[in-house]
Image (cartoon, rainbow, N blue to C red; front, side):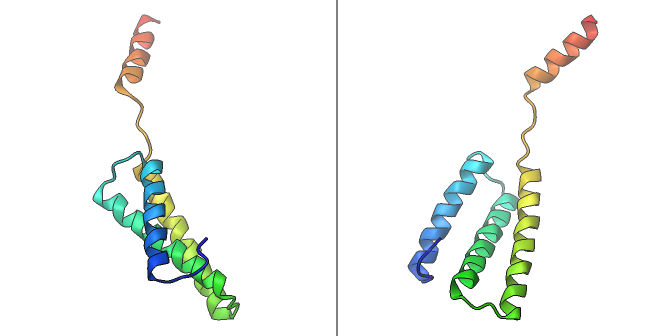
Length: 101
């Protein structure tokens, strides 16, 4: 969590989170995944900034709830896009076993 929420802190935060998401997805991302990752990073930054501000007004709480919902939806769509497909060799092995039986 950043201690300060300035321009340089945001750049470091974005760079760090981007690297983490690239590792999570598997190294290369599609354009759609890049948009989702950027939305996740922006939502997380805004949520942390609101939490660190100590502002617990009703508007701030509502904003954090909306940001969490946005993050959940973005993460769900990213996980669907990054779901690994089984290798072809294992699929063929299953077909061969079924034919022998």
